Length: 473
Image 1: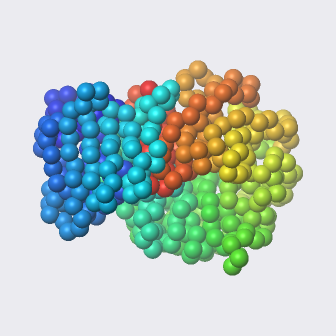
Image 2: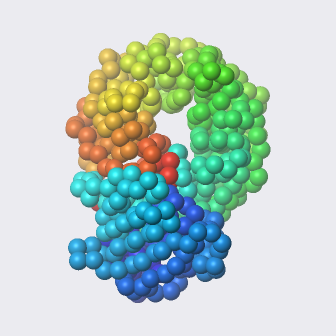
Image 3: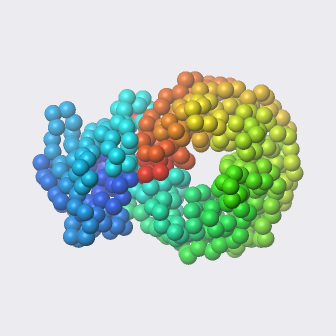
């Protein structure tokens, strides 16, 4: 049985043109040990079922045997509502009741139900009501892992298991995703990127293992699964992994940002690492570039010489450091931009004039600004211009969200638990922000792509409890 992810209505088999999504996936909502009854049977609006706790790898994704799994029973009921399409009530076994309205995905906050801690407002102008996937995640990427030209998802599993896992959701191109496939990586792998490390045309994964001081390389098989991980040493506490072809060889290299957490919990002197790919899925010995303690970096041709450079957040000193690539995997220190306390850093050609610009979020718990430093060419930049966003901007993407040919800004607001969209004017300026709540503990890393084949960009974001999908209206 499937339901419409946008309206909550039950979809019969003959109605294949509507946008629909597996009920079993929708109900997890970050509480990823709730088993869901098996798919494939029709269920009326007044039907009631019983489900128990189970692993998300079996019953939670339609294992018919899931209703006999051991654990704490959960009550699920489906019924019509006077002003909603479908209501789900979940007795969490702790005396709290969470009401999930499938019509607009509003969830009443409870201390035990962690997916959304506030009602999701239906007044979001750009996106339809959120759709939620397990597992709990911080970082989410959209990519095609099985070569069918349909977008898939990859996220890390924050379920508390050590070593960590990454989860791959194979998509059907219409906004539906299969049960996740898990691949083991190192401890606390909360940063990863994808690239082709062995030149076979199949996407591979590189995951930075924060506790292990390693990066895991998983070579793709082309069907959404991966070879077992092979690890390489990194600097202390890898916190950001970027795959990029630094030498124009057609093979992805790696930039790995080291946070270097000392015993007292404070960031120490650190920098970023460079791992150059051999084209065979292996990497040359690590090169380390010294800089300040950091969380974020971005790559782009900052000085117009044709080679990729690095823009890196420099600790809490309120600067972005520029490092110019030489095309051979080496970097030389360039100028530093003073922009105020920095969180996220993005490099993009906002004006589409061939000159790369730098966007940086202002770091803090209550700040609400992103600074845009427009490129002047040859590695020089104008004064940073502030634009208001939601609370605590974290990640920044630059995408044409409305199809007018001008690049817009999309921002995840960490403490604001929301996604902000700012319409671009094509000249480097941006309009007022429009926010869409995503619930969870925070709004972290996200990716933008057309998930359902309607030609409009959608958003997939991690909120620590789940992966949240925002489908463009």
